[in-house]
Image (cartoon, rainbow, N blue to C red; front, side, top):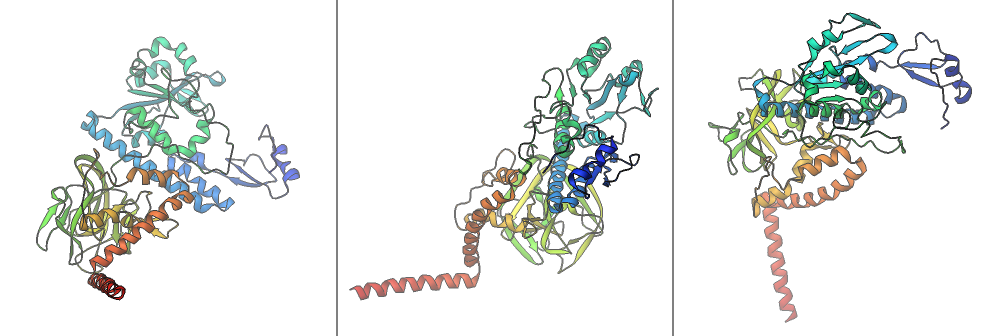
Length: 529
């Protein structure tokens, strides 16, 4: 646990002296020490060479292997990747809802002024790069330039005149440096003609502190995406920016990251829970209501009978989601069968020929995977193309088995809340967990009063969806298990009663038990008399 401070890591003699303090098996992690021959065990990291945010973050998996925490790294990566995708899909939906739906996207500028080492000019973003990915995933266009004329350590800077010509009409300006105030004073007369400046839509990257952008930001790329989307107007309005600061209206370092007091404490994501509709089928998908008749999903209602498997039909007792005017993002799964593409949300669960018992999350599917059909046992269709589409309408019918057949393909009524097919270390499937937790609704709809109130988002209000999403994304595994196990046990008991009342053997057993109890009470009375 000894800490050794080396002021200058380019001082190779000082770096090598670590062997004298810590022993011969010291491992040095670095970006590039090829020009500094070292006596240590050297591991070169290449994250800085990546242009994609998930690819940068994925280097965590490489590091994890040295500390035997690969499983935890995979868990963190999958969770962040799921949150990132959700925000991107949400941005697409928000853009489609707004007046940007005609195809016009907000324009963002990524640029800063430098006078380093006596060289002055404007650095404007170039693609591919991580910020270009942020712009694309937030449904925004980004201004880029390779027309600079001032050499700056291999890159080209723009003159002020060229910069004004290329950047003045941007709707938003992200200034990725710490010197906005001095830059604005120096070029105020020119910058006051910029649309972004006039509208006070300029943001720097100092919201979380002076150095955090180059360190902590890499571990919160999903949160940075939410911030970027918030800047350009395509984020959930509940989100409060952390990394990007409005230079006109917000103070510096308002959300400054302090020193970590307990390195062993679990990571608590600061991500705003995604509100994207990701639990549904589009209204244009179809289901069979009998052997010869089909209905579109948007025309279904509670009480309708739909196909749930090979020659099996069940009644719809409720909807996990029902909203006709909701815009939602769907995967279009094209197959080599004659049916129309299946339009399904990324988080929804669907059965494949390789997973006939446990459905997989739709976003994990790839070309060549075979989707399970309900025409006969073990028949399937291969996926030939996967596209994305935004459509009106979001529907998720619930059946007694938790299954339904959509466009001929066997799917689950449920969704994965973590982006994986399994929960709890691969022991419990999300389908099984959801089916257990919806037992009260299923039971009371069949044997008692069935209340189908829906909130403004079209979600059945009795389902603690927000609670479950928050718990799975933020709570530690210990607390998740502590909360879920009692819920599961209670619902399993109710499910056992439901099964007994549903099957003929169960009904016979219940009837016999009831008769036996009545006879016992009658005989007891006679004895007492």
